[in-house]
Length: 277
Ligand code: C2E
Ligand code: CA
Ligand code: CA
Ligand code: CA
Image 1 (tube, rainbow, N blue to C red):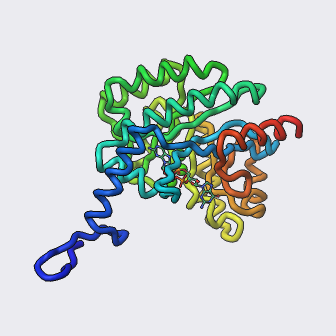
Image 2 (tube, protein in one colour):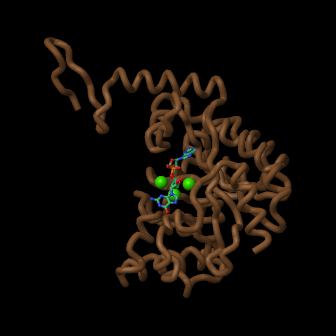
């Protein structure tokens, strides 16, 4: 939107009320943070509903700008718009790969390490090489790449070929934010995908609204029928977790009730405790 500034000057303001100048400064600072490799990762555990055990983690990018945490919902779209998302994604993957070494020592049995990627990364000719390197360095831990379906999955043959190559390299793919996207679900069985992550909005009211629960359960059933692993996101209350108990077998969940995102140092402590439990 466009608002009148002082005198003749007009200032552009985005939907969050930020001025053009503020946005430019944000992009500048983000570019500098990437140049200096200053982004961090917070890891949020993913838990098996039936046993309560941690079976994996999701890597979430964190950026402290002059001591203040910038929300990913601000800096990720900024990075997308400014052409910085490919570099950001590469750095997150590299850091996660390094952290995977410590994680491998802390877990026994299969373990998933999920990294969010932008659709733009699937169009990068060098992306498959990065994935191959990450997979071989992570040995023993399964790399899962989360692709959001919010804007619809691009079914360009080149993107499909990249997804196939990623899977051939030994990584897996998850459809993120499943159930709130624009795309139809009919393409799902054609994609090389192993997991779906039911969006948090689908779990929001499952403890108070029978229809909400019925909807989520049908998404879970559909996912299972098609052979996907299913993760339910946004579990914040015991009553939501209890509502999922009947579907517990093989179902995975994530949310603040279970574990909040945390630095890798803290994750290692939590994993050690989980292993003793
Ligand atoms: P997402 O991939 O759907 O990640 C889950 C988000 O939900 C995270 O927000 C997480 O902190 C939050 N969350 C987890 N449990 C709960 C809960 O019980 N209740 C609520 N209200 N929220 C919960 P976060 O870390 O702020 O990230 C926001 C989004 O930014 C992510 O959503 C993802 O789309 C994007 N993002 C984060 N890191 C990266 C990255 O490295 N690359 C890309 N391309 N996108 C990223
Ligand atoms: Ca995600
Ligand atoms: Ca999600
Ligand atoms: Ca999200």
